Length: 360
Image (cartoon, rainbow, N blue to C red; front, side):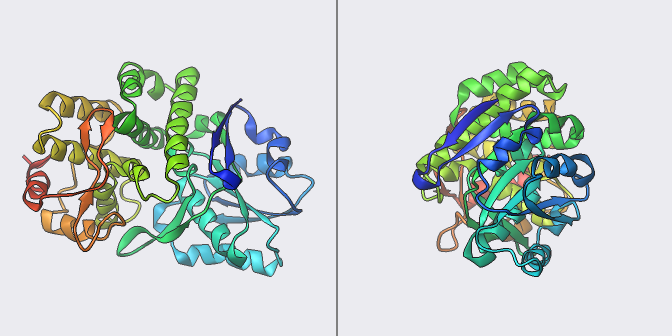
């Protein structure tokens, strides 16, 4: 097991990365202060891993909430089911919530923990590659609204993250590829050497080579932990983690939550951001081709859906937390390995990307 630290003063916490971690009770007890524990999971993960977690929590008073699986259920309505369980069983402010699942469960569980009695402890146990390398780390929690993704939420840090590599054995190929989209992002925004490693080793990751996966997870978490430690609430460099996400969130919202996996939408959005970076004169044609090719090798989509025209994209992109005074602001790339901070975008250049990239 490797341990990374997200350094945030008195809110610092460890990320445990390794195999067989679900079966190690001591990892839980380090982070749980009182007897009451609620485990939040979904209908897909519960039959696979819930009992392993419950066995490791044998000395605690445990309740469970099993939610339906899918981005379309990441709403206030389903978070209320978590509150119902906490209240009906008289959980106190000393209770701990454990989020066992992918990014949807992690975001919903963390948001419920942030809100219940103004904040209870929670633990992230991510069960998808995307959640292990991205959404479980950094304290972003929340739910979707019909008008925008992740627009209702809070910054709220976990007590720890337990990333058990063994759970990836049951992850389907589509979910694995979606997670790789976020892995690639770290190379693009701040770690060119890692991007080059991914170009060389992407086939090993797709065939679930344990050594390669462990390295990719650790490097991704290390990159994110460093960014979050520097900028917890996204007032500066943390915004670079949103490369491709403004386009991607528009795709998820405009297509209907659940049509595209988050990583699939981010892959398309990152290719659009690369195209726009080229139009700004920062990336070469060869750079953009390298980026698109790496996503294609992961069997990820790289072109936007036909049903979203430029007007609809602009409407959806206007609902983004990086925007200021109605001006769309994006993360772009100065080069592979160097991202911009959020910048105002010339609408004509943006329209060129929206009207032509992937549509000719």
